[in-house]
Length: 145
Image: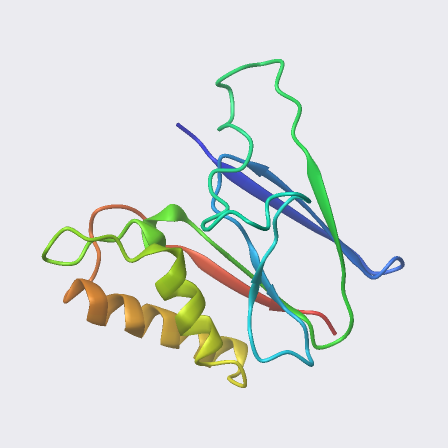
């Protein structure tokens, strides 16, 4: 199956628009906050993991995908990743998961984008006790200027 998270930033409106197709949630951080939040559709805030959102691509050709709009200001950040990060197993078979990913991001709030990505990968390597080989491990961190 193929999942997707599409993020479009509209500078004129100072908004990010996000759509999901079975993909784990994008995280965002406000410049004035010390924690990261999940970008979820309204009404999903009470759920623990926020995943999956909508269904993967091409499962049903009539699927309509929802869109989330998040207002953004300079200094706000977005973090996108593939499920290879949250599904990465440790030697006991436990998955890295969304909570560990968010904890790694929260622990590195003041870091540069490059250092933030390195910290996530370092935390992942420590958890798995090796470089993950089960799936792709892709991430991107963005900051609004």
